[in-house]
Length: 403
Ligand code: NAP
Ligand code: MG
View 1 (cartoon, rainbow, N blue to C red):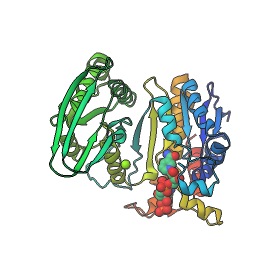
View 2: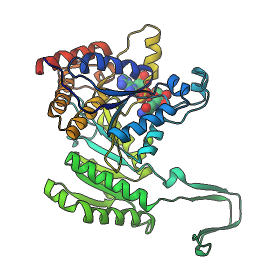
View 3: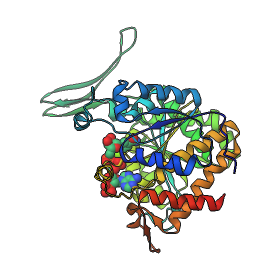
View 4: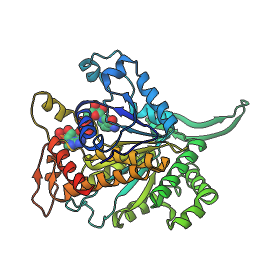
């Protein structure tokens, strides 16, 4: 059979440890036999980031801006222990943070569902995608441990130097704590655009929640800007696509999410998204079954698995022990990127291949062939536990059968 051709390269970002090993297996067994794979390769493995003083990460982000679609392997975010382990020149920044910053992107996380793993919440039938605003709020707040009696004030001085706002926050009669945080209209607006575009792309309803009844300026601004952008830019397209946008209070959203069937995009402010994405992903089963896409306001995409480099398995692998590391989220990162590349280039064969590889992966799991992490979660069938290599071979057999 002739290999599928590609017109535009994918930006390929290799990574670290166990996921780097899976990365090569997936390319060798599941992609290159079928596709004349065209990628622009960036090695974001920690040794190469160190060699290039992290320039390779910045270059890969520029390449995503140029070509529009990238796929990324999990990478180590160095801490003090990693600096020692890899004898690093510096404690390099998280590659994900660098790429997110360069693309001004929003991360969307979606679970991959299979019949034999039931979500903890019984009503959930379809995936819930969470979008988290990754700018400002408590993550960029200024804090002060108040030592004792005194007055705390909020002051704003405009560009010309005149004080246009001053209000007492609290007259402290004893020690306490103080915090001030900010956000920007421009960031909220680009966040809103990316979310509305994502919902349209995926043809799913979009929910947005804050606490505007209590936060009458801050959260209210988020609510109003989203509504304005929706009315001016997306209302018609949503109606045409048969999908809905609505705003509700975060408390109401939480209650509705738990009673829902799933199948929507839940847009969250920074802190809410941080907390709720962990709750939702745990309730769906496993971090190893969660995909993640970074999308920029001008329509650039970076796909990855939501989990890390699975260090504990890698150390066992180095000792020559067999590991049963789940490759599914990394496979779905590749298929997400190939499908998008296909869509953008009008390359139907490439998108169709991505669908077939997804289907073969799901079929393998539904037939009970799975890695160790899932076997314990699985209900109603007797699972066959395989190592990573055999998991990929089993998927390939089903892919061939479906071609
Ligand atoms: P992790 O790599 O996600 O792994 C944590 C644990 O979750 C594993 O030890 C394993 O549990 C289980 N697990 C995760 N993915 C799995 C898979 N595909 N198959 C089977 N089990 C899986 O998180 P971590 O150990 O906290 O972090 C390791 C490194 O990854 C760190 O250096 C961190 O900086 C990096 N990281 C990178 C990204 C990214 O690039 N996006 C994200 C998070 C973390 P058991 O050991 O119990 O089997
Ligand atoms: Mg969190």
